[in-house]
Image (cartoon, rainbow, N blue to C red; front, side, top):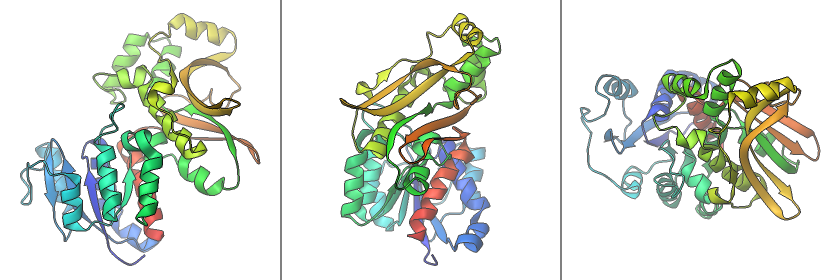
Length: 344
């Protein structure tokens, strides 16, 4: 793994910045441990500007500008021009393109366009965005295969918790009949707070203060974020494309303290459960609050943690639990994907 990999990053918000920090902090260790040599040659963000260098950017300079100015426009190579992904990727001959752009639940953009441009150029692609892979994972994988490159998207479902790598590697040979879990940390945090006596409104306010929820939390609390992750799991585990509109979706806005108390009195706990399963009529995706038995593997998953329980033919139920949000945690999933690509 001695060849230097030229890396480009689209999107430099919380996750993108976390990835830059992680690559900077672990550069020497990654070289010693894995022989992973890289140069971060491109960072492009619609709001913060574009900087590029064929010989690699200085991550300390990048992070200093982001911390002090909130953008990259003061860097020597900065540009405010809106380049297309094709222009940027082609000009630098990148080996790995990292996509950390925000998710659009309806169109899959800008992620979809970035991933298509990367794979078409002969670069491998890694994404934390749910947009592109949620919208057309099958098409993107076909494009990757046709160009002899790889597409990896671990961070799009459970942040850095290795659900997809688990099914691809350790569970190879197992057929999955159902994948069901807690895939949105914001709603799980809110429900945990409500169980402790907080109202929905106060729990949401605290989630926003901690950075778990956006100023407009609809994507989380109305179940859209979980639904697009169901679409990704349907394609990844069953090879079937379903749209967000086909997922039976109910959020947590209708959950009351009384619902929480009633469930507790019955030995149950309310969780927002997202899942996809194989039935006689085909593949079904769903998101909604459920009062699950306190002994269920998902019942003990509290706070902003996520978990998925996989039902398999060879091993029965296998549950994976871990962080479902966070800059460094999500960046770890992207880093693991890059290392897999670099190791061939």
